[in-house]
Image (cartoon, rainbow, N blue to C red):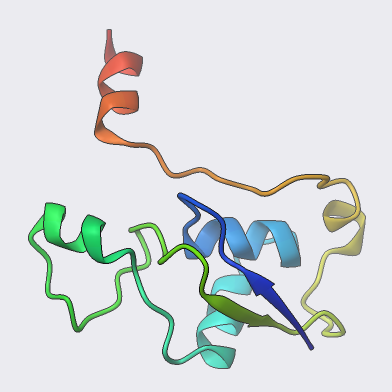
Length: 100
């Protein structure tokens, strides 16, 4: 097991892709981190319940997440090619620019 720090604008899918090499890592991250939190500012902006967790919203930056780095779920051939933080989160402004 290892501990990693959530970077700005990362979602749970980003962590799964970065550390497991597959979206299947989402369920493992949730299992190992039952108290995972979303970014409170994003929750407020979306008008969502602050007590709930939403996998489609970015995570709270700086929180520590446990990753099973010895598990069979990891796609090692993919993970070894990732050399930076994965961030797929798109702000509304980014989405609007892409639609132009």
